[in-house]
Length: 335
Image (tube, rainbow, N blue to C red; front, side):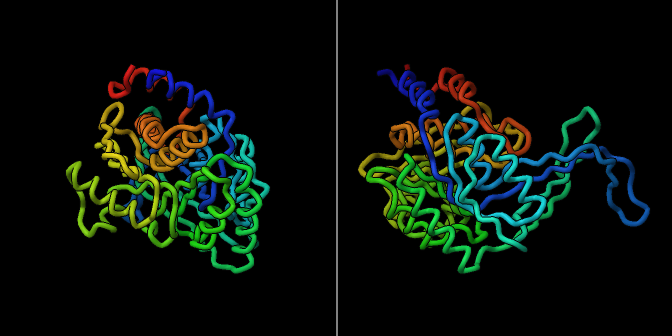
């Protein structure tokens, strides 16, 4: 089967895949306004409020991308019994997500990233400020609930995505229990903010260059330096493969027993918004593995999905039709 045909087949197979999403569930809240005047009270811009947009962020964005690509996904995570938590759960429910194992913790503040965007009524809005509402999961009872959910759900999925934004939902014992209960041959792929080595062994990982440089001790710049740093981290994680995301330079795949595979960025390096692009890469990579794809095929589709999503404003998702079109258009995908 030709490479393009195989990739198209994998995308069509997403609808038959069930993925477990274990991670920090975040609400991305966008406040949009148009400039009104400079305040008399302080040298700050006053905006006239136009609208508020709430979309899944963090691990919830990875979940939303799996759903938008046609996959089925069950979440293991934590939200608070607050308004952002209810908005986030309702949004994911409407997209088809399974949330029965999301722990609702009284008094916990659902992680919410509030971005304030300004621009003329018919102009592109630009981010002018941001504030984060955040709590950390450290309660032993809550962690035990997460461990029980992971043990119960892992045997019935085709892949697992681990999305660690550092808010405590993801911890080493949770990763261990997840991998312990996954069926043989089912892979767990992790995306973690500077904490990958602390999570213990995983099957695959998606560090960006900053996270890779934290491990390597220097910022890798050339293809060779990126591949060497990625391979060093892969061995430390005892992973089967690692995908290093490189922004406008595409991505690099290192896989056990295989030479490095470098993919150029898809589309243009003049991006509209990189918000959530790593979540899209994690989602597409994991879903492709769930559909029976190889790490190389998963890296190709993840690279295409990342190239699509950065051309959209805000936290965005990718559809199967968009991914099919990208497969046909990408010059590095062979007939």
